[in-house]
Amino acid sequence: MMLALTLLISLLLGLLPCLWFFNGKQPFPGRVLFNLSAPLGVGISSVIFIILNLIGLPVYLIFLLELALIGFAIYRYKIFQNNNLRQLLRPTGILNTNELFKNPLLLLITVVYAYAWLMNAGIFTFDTIKEPHGLWDAWNYWNLKAKLISKAPDIWPTLFHRMGSEEYHVDYPLLQTGFIALCWMNLKSETVLVPIILAFVFTFCTVGLLSSAVSFFTNKTKGLIAGLLLLATPFFMTMGDSQYADNTVGFFFLATTILLTFARSENVQRPQLFIAAGITAGLSAWSKNEGLLFIVCLFLSQVPLIFFKNFRELFHELKYIVYGMLPTLILIFYYKTNIAPPNDIVHAQGSETLVKITDPTRYALINQWFYQTFGTFGKWFINPWWLFIGAALYLGISFKAHKNSLIAGFSLLLLMMCGFYSIYVITPLELTFHLSTSIHRLFFQLFPTFIFIYFLALKPRTSNIKKQ
Amino acid sequence: MEKLKYILNITDKILLVAITGVIVIQLFKIFENHKSSFENPSAYFNQNYGNDFVTQYGHRFTELKKMFPNVTILSYIAEPNEDFASQWTNFFLTQYHLAPHLVEREGEPHDTILYNLYNSKQIDPATNTYLNQGWHIVKDFNNGLILLAK
Picture 1: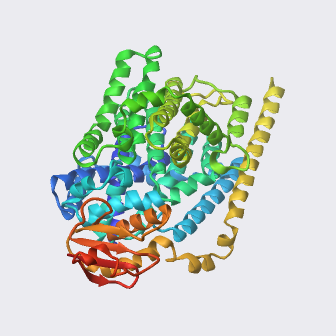
Picture 2 (picture 1 turned 90 degrees about the horizontal axis):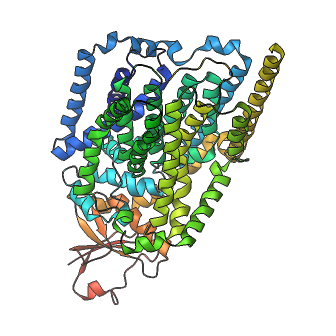
């Protein structure tokens, strides 16, 4: 009961801002909002919980404050009279069956999608029964720290500080950890159900968000194929049910890109969508350290837009993104400077760095791993890149409809890959070990975002393109 | 022009069916890898539920945890001559199951030492440095976990 209530509060903490982000948006992207709300709520809950806990509030008071916040938002913004909520709650807001039966091909793909979804949910369940605590990183990093917070809420910063960064990666941000700890404290029990539900939400909401967003900007068939590409990738589910945070950070990368595309798909500037993108980008940095790299790359990826749009307009957009991410960034800054020991990779930099940068054998090894990972990506029976290349060659690529989003999106992906590459060049860890334990996961963090940008760039057959 | 549109429409559909076909084959391959679990879920459940290594390992700590009502820092001593992987696994699992208490492998010994002798189960009193220095066994949990204090 208490678990259901805690999850409901988190859901509302995500749903209410989402209704505001998309207020007045026509056509209303109900399915996007549906898939965005729960993970966003988890992120917001985690941030609120850690801030209030650090201030010294007990968990019951945090719970009551969250309830009061939700109550105030519902009363102040008359949520139950909100058209968006009504549209979302209408059955056709989620699934339109009439359209399906008119198009046999769409029906076929929908059936395959439903089958793939259910099969993956089954696999998730089976793997979870086998490893309920998740794999190594899940119990040793995320869930261990959640135990420390939930059982020692007054002194966990001291305990964290005492633990070594190398062994426990205490410098990793606390989105997943914070939310699990909050639920465990409300429940007064350390049930593995909480991290399992969390992993399920992020894994399947990533599929749902990708599918619904591609569907919104292109068409339903492409949306379903986009979702299927994720569902048919075995490693995606492995990452989900292992309870690692890579799907979490990957979700927020995707959400940020989608929200920015929404924000730029209209002639009228909608500040709340840029704020939303800022919030999700901030939450990506609160999920994993790669999120910090993402934020840097996000701003750098906007630089090429100087040539394509009004500088003042771009400046305002970036300003709203900063507003959105600021609270989370302040929390991360406080956590990194006052609680967590220094990051092992950053801390180890010094005179050795120059030696590594000028060592060609490191570049050769990294190139080899990048090439191999592309070649064996996702553990498909054929390399899925052929599908992407084939469809792009057949349909063509067009930047016409979403020029700014596509330029920024492709730049972002490229910069992220360069960022990952650079980290490998300077890593203090044994290079082969570091590459073998992380490169496939890093690629997967970007995979949903890549699929979204790719489908956005595919040339539409009809000319009903939305003007940017 | 109409003919071209018609041909394009047909080729679009063929491409779509081909992509869907590749995805269906891929889904089938995934299913094949999990076939036994899907075919007999109850057997899978009975065989695996609660039998994972992390859960099983945690049962060893139930009694030990009751001895520390407040957050404590314990020194940790592993099995001698343990291989690298087992050493780390045992240490991290101990930390996971004992949280919020901390276990430390390095530095000066704390007031309490936890021996985690997963294989040998016993301390040799004749050769143990701490016992010879006046420490005593607070409790031997008979599962390889032995608590020593000054």
